[in-house]
Image (cartoon, rainbow, N blue to C red; front, side, top):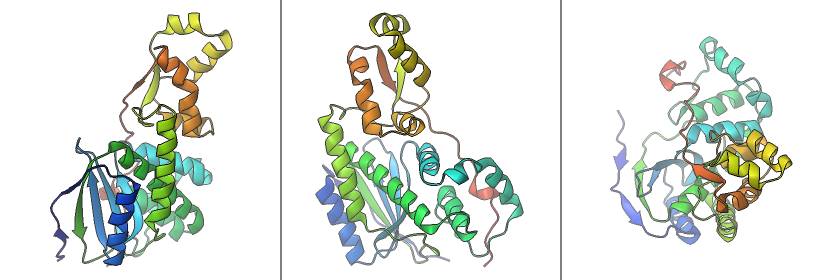
Length: 271
């Protein structure tokens, strides 16, 4: 039996980098182990899993599956290229004492590190990138509510223990650049879609028209497209601004992908 303790939701207006650093530093000083739950005013939630105040993993937000798949392609391409084969093997493996308390995505990373299919350093880089992306999204929301869930039984195995300050500063710098690029009102999780195909063809060159119609289908976010084109999401978004201003393109919300596995189907740990 556990005796997890949950605090009330506490609001933080204008959750800028300095306030983020203050919150995480306080948890580090307190040696907090458990979950830090952040929620925006639309009730979108992110969950940071902490061990002695350091970040072990983060999940949640609008597109947790898309986010994980994008970073898998970038940081672990050899796994991404044979992901289905790896998933098919799950029913045949039994990994002693593997931790599955966090989420399916962390479980898979832990499993591949345990099996030595993935270098711990590469998995750590992927987690750092995921943390920075989530912090960017949280910064863009402005006001947040936070809640602490103190865990008597912390995460059993940590791929990495990440100090938050570097990731916060990295996300804040990206947010500042995003604002300066006249993108503040747009989320990088929005998907560009062609608003008026005839006008697009009439008002662009044939080459530009062909590029845009091949690239944009309204089903992939700015972040997804940046990974596909092996470019930076900032460059991808900037390249589309003229067509957004001309109302030839629009940015639309898209759903997340389905998780490739569910925890209930995974092999259980021995106790």
